[in-house]
Image (cartoon, rainbow, N blue to C red; front, side):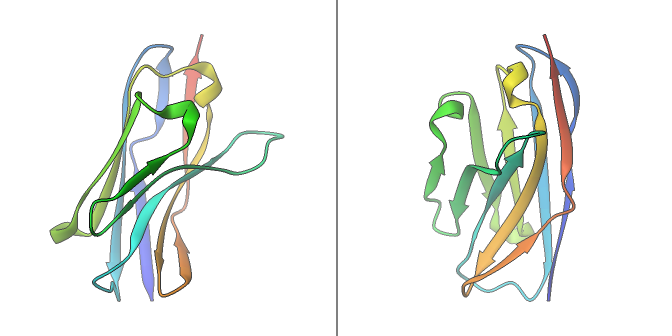
Length: 115
């Protein structure tokens, strides 16, 4: 079993920054991918960013240049640094960990960007 605990959401003005954290515990294998999805009211869930244990990253086009995903493998923790936030980034952000074709999810954290 794997447990994910997220932290770091909140309310910020447009142009501001937030950092999300996702701490994983339990049966973590040596190769996995972590990242975040987000879902805004009335919209489909969207994959925001991913990072593998090897350090490979991917981002949705709308956050490239503004968001940075990183991880501390020793702590099994991933981070999403979000800069230059826009109102359209407002959503619930869900951390995930994928290993051996199984997905594990965090509880979600609300990010609200005011204009």
